[in-house]
Length: 434
Image (cartoon, one colour):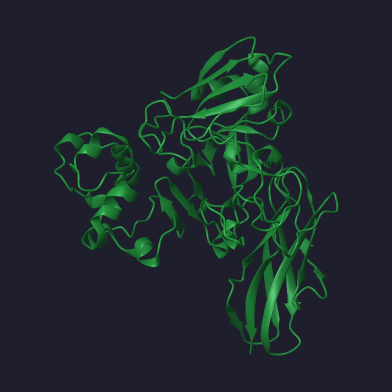
C-alpha cells in the first residue's frame, strides 16, 4: 500500500487527529469503529511490540486508543533504520534511496525491509529452534547454539534484491509494492552453510525442492495461515554460497531483517531468503507453498506486449536475478560548478559475475568504461567508479550499464511483465553543469 508524503512524515498524534481510522488499520491492524482494545488479542499487539522494539508485559492495562510514548512522536520511522522510505505498514515494507546505498557493505540501518506478513513478537535467540525434515534420512531440530557448534561458521558479503525492485517504473502500472531502486542491499552475513546442514540431515535421492517456513503470521490474523513459504531447487540449495544466518554486519540480525535466524539465498529473488526461519523441509515436487503458485514470483516464458494478459500456464518461476547496476554517488539532481565529476556505484548479476560497467553522458551515443573493483566474494556486488568530463554547461544524464560474464547487458527499456518483476533497465541520474 503506497503512502502520501503526509502519511510518511506525520507523527502518530497528528495522524490520529487527521485520520484515526487510517492509523488503526495501517499501523495497529485494528478495525475502525470497533472496540479499540480488541486488537490486543490479535496480530495488532505484535505490530505495536515491533514498533516499540520489545514485548509489552502489561499490555492488558493499556487504555482504549492508547499510543505508546516510544512511538507517539516518531515520524512513523522504524527503530534501528535510517533514511528508509516506507511503502507500506501492514505488512511493513521500506526501501533505501540510492544515494544512501553508497557503502561497500550496506549498514544494517540502511538495509531494505520486505515483509509479506506480520513479524513475530518473540525473537529470543536462546529459545529459537530450526527443524530440518521431509525427505531426509536424519530429521533434526537445532538451536542457534547447535548451528554454531556443529557447523563451520562463515561470514560473507551477499547481495539480496527483491524480485519487484524497480516495479514503480512499469508502464502500464502493475500492482504490488511500488519499489523504485532501493530494494537491494549487500550486507555482511554470518552463519552456517545451508548445504552443510542439509548434508548432515542426509538428503534423499528423490529430493527436487526445498520448502521454507518462517514464524511471521498472515496479515489476516488467521491462525496457521502462512504469508510466505517459498523454496528453491535442490541444486541451488546445495550451492555453498547459501547461508542460514544469525549475524549481520558483526551484530545480530535486525528484527525486520529476520532476527534471530534467516536464510540468505544470494543471486535469486529475496523472497527465497526466508526470514524468522523455523523449518526447512525437503520435497520430491516443486514446492507449492504461499507465493509459489499462480503468478507469484513468476514471469512470462516469452516476451509480451506491455499490458498483455498472460495465462498462468505460461508463467515460469523466477530463478537467477538479472545483471544490474546502481549509481550511488552523486545523488540525482546535482548541480556542479566546473566540468569534471566523479561517479560511482555497485553492480551485481544474480548467479553470474559482473564483467564490466560502462557509463554514458550523451544518452547512450557513446560509452566510457568504468573501473571495477574485485568482489569481496562470490555473490557480493562489485564497486565501480569513473571520472566524467562534460564538454559544456547544460543538462546531462549519467547512465550506467553493467554487463555480466555471459555477455548480457542491461537494457534501456523495461521488459514488461504483469507482476512487475526483474526490472534491470539502466539506472540514470540527472546533472546540471554550470
